[in-house]
Image (cartoon, rainbow, N blue to C red; front, side, top):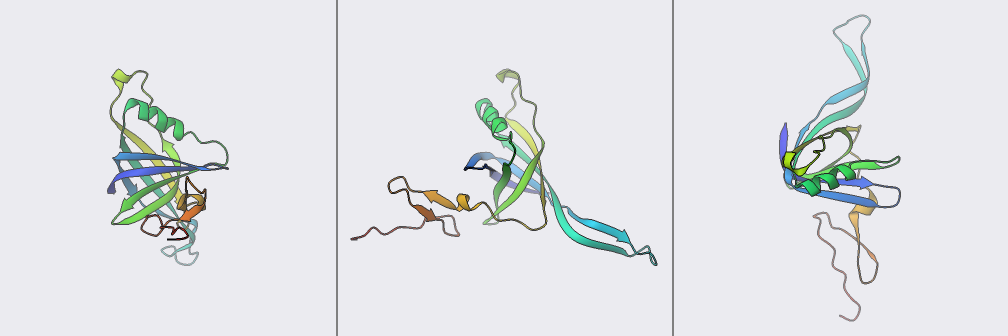
Length: 165
């Protein structure tokens, strides 16, 4: 299991993309390689024929949040039809992202006295190859002009030169 500091959850809806940042938290990912078709050879049962490889990663997250942030997080994780959830985190100066489904959620405390700061979340990532993030996530809208600006690979905004400079 590998551990990481902080993560971001992204929810892609039909019209836009919402995000929830967990600054204080860890991500532990356990990659599991599986096969859709797995048969033993009829003549030699020690030989296993495998086709259509896919991955089913188990992702365990621990988020350290306040009670108000916990309610916001649990509300964020409730998906409707057609919505896709992604998890994004940094690993060795590289941003990793996976499409996930919620496996286990923490019990919601009935009052703040029973609340513990560390909250465990479990996700499952199913993919055959790592998909790219939604296009709208790689763009940011400028407040003044309303133009879209692509982000550089390092995550910094591209500078736009104004005319006449």
